[in-house]
Length: 444
Image 1: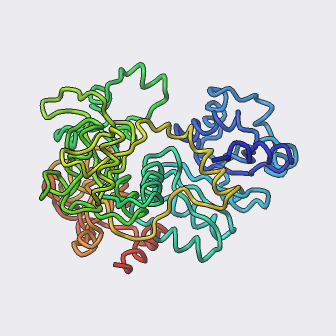
Image 2: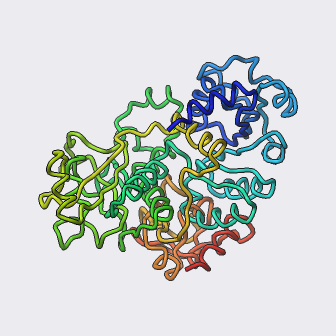
């Protein structure tokens, strides 16, 4: 609970945590806004395919031009400045850098970047959770083999949910369920980048002002991102996933203890120890008050009369039986909270969440009838969305992971609502992402 003090001490000692960042989009820019304020962290280098765009984003969040004008990584490391370039291999191999932050949002590229960083004995914070969803356990294994730390990104909902699960278990509670909130109605599954802003609740002007990517935000709305993040939570926390995908029950925060319990007791879970996502909209589309749309939660059990009595005595909200209770973090601040991961790794040597099992997987599910010859355009696009499935079921069925459904050609028709399989596509078997995924599948 003293990371801020320890970061300040690192700065005072002239020994800040030195990081390199790959990708300077929305998440990365939010982190850079905080890194400008947090002197215990030194961003030595930023790598982006479009360095001028990265520099524009630095201007947007108030960086002084002199600070990011270092001519080289060596110059940046020596003078406490930042170098902006487009050579990720130079970044991950530079000896002054302790931690690599991968936040490109491109899952296939992310795998290559992360494995490359491991080879250079660099710790990695992976913001591209799409990659974690289909090969997170592989990252954990490769990091241990390299003697480094691999971590999910604090500020994103999986790491925040994992933190709550850890809190509950460290207190001695039995975790019944954990997850995040979402704005969900069934027809959102067919949303495309053309329909996102009306559904999301922003104007085109607001989206452009924030430099928001419609495809990325559509991945949240169409169920892909909730599936991805739920898989990451399940694989990190050792929780199961629903057999046929997320249920998205509507409810307020106070409804969570009633919803997130087994069906045999009136809830929506197949069994105890699962992930789920709570919708902030009723079935008629009306808004639920005191929702958890932007946050995370953990439901835990008072499994003795004494614990139930404690819940009652301290007037906490439970399900009708008094047995189940929820704790939550109502808001997540995305990249603005990422310094917590940097400090946790750089000071304590601890990840803020890492996959240890392969329980949840995210299959590419067709949004409409797809024809042979079409190209899949990945999460948030026009062709497929992500469906959470038990990893055993996904691997046994040969389901194509959503993270590998980018720029892939169909060789067979796929009906609307059906999982796309490996046999339905011409997969690129030469990528690091494909190879690591196949290694992970062998663990099932």
